[in-house]
Length: 488
RNA sequence: CGGGGCGUAGCGCAGCCCGGUUAGCGCACCUGGUUUGGGACCAGGGGGUCGGAGGUUCGAAUCCUCUCGCCCCGACCA
Image 1: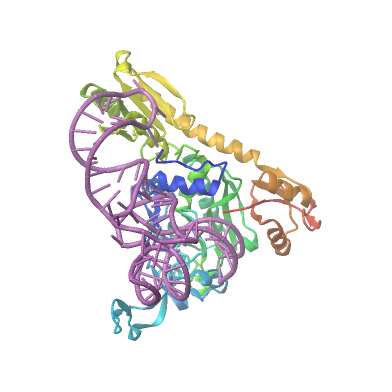
Image 2: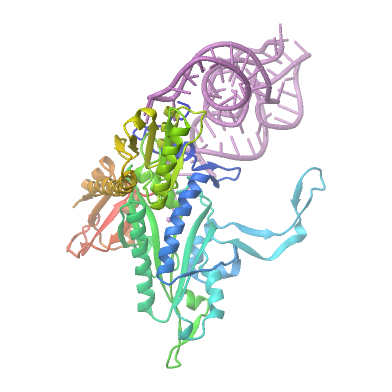
């Protein structure tokens, strides 16, 4: 009642904001464009971090930390890079405040102007490559496989919680290699890890592909991306992995001697995913009742609700169940609050997306059973206490699978292949989702399509075989189909 | 930056056009009681000076001027 959520069918955007707010994921803050990530939202991010961090480390990467501030001159060393980020940088110009001589408050002390302005990192290639110059002399210093978990700032004009905030949290990997091949393999490896994480943990199906030149990361030779589809038919770029060639090594003069004492510039990759993934998670699975979380990332996987309220007998059974589940590595919470009634709690946990709810009342105990409700399908069923741990364990797996399958069915159903521009526009308008079509490979065509339809090329899919055809817009020859969509 | 909307209690809003005594409602909160298998009910209670500044007036949430901020749509973008 107090927690009414706008229906997705009425206003998807409002629905999204309601979920973020009412499920307690994040709040707007006093700072324009910056959000406060609340405990539930942050716990989801922590679970994402934990898994990704594990995957990075399993593949030989280590974490480090580089400064928040980047000297202005660094940013301009790579021409394309600065061009891409110049318009959205927070700039530090002074380092001291003073009392306002005209009265109350403080003002910037003009005498504290910095010799060289500092930029709050929008990404860290420059400061890192400036450092790598000192770290790399020989092929024996390579590869360098470093990641950092940090905040970055991009002064976007318009922001949305998680999807695009002025400050956001992410990880950025920056690797250095002795050969082009090795750097390319690294880029592909991370691309693969991102896709696996999205599908196996977030239960969010993604399409792997490469960006067009126009959509490429500023300073990259090639950008690999995973693209997901949200419930409203818009695409979300969920993670990118960039092959940087020798661009940054050249800009920052990072060279190494190979085993023949030949000096060459280092090859590089960089890659990142951000708190945007939390937004993607919300928009992939949640419904009009609230958040729906895949078990693998849910901070609480199972909640036990005593009905109508806790008593010693129920709590004993509850804690036995919790013990058994915890032994299987399942995250369980017993709701011991006596002041709220069951109906309120049910609604609350549905809003918060807890995958499984176990209700225990005296009526159940007489029959040696409990009531199990799954969040994804809203089904409820009585389950015997005997073997309940195995039952729940399996159910969590089933929910994880079901969420992925449901999302994938929706996604697959929203890939429309078209041969002419009229069909292109119709499909985009009526159905949304990805539009697969031949493209002549020119930026000019890409931009014209964007101008006329707002759709951009999300990627050139990896698994799309070459085929000859005519560009959907220009009718020029094309040898590959690409995916278009309106995107977040 | 262009277009639209909005700032009144923790949240959501009414009041403003047609100035007039202690600024109102729902949710939330506190106390007591009755309840308790899908967002309980009754009674009592606490909390706001109406985004800010200036002005008009006997009198301003209400009228005027300036100002600050937020949200939505667009251009930009992870």
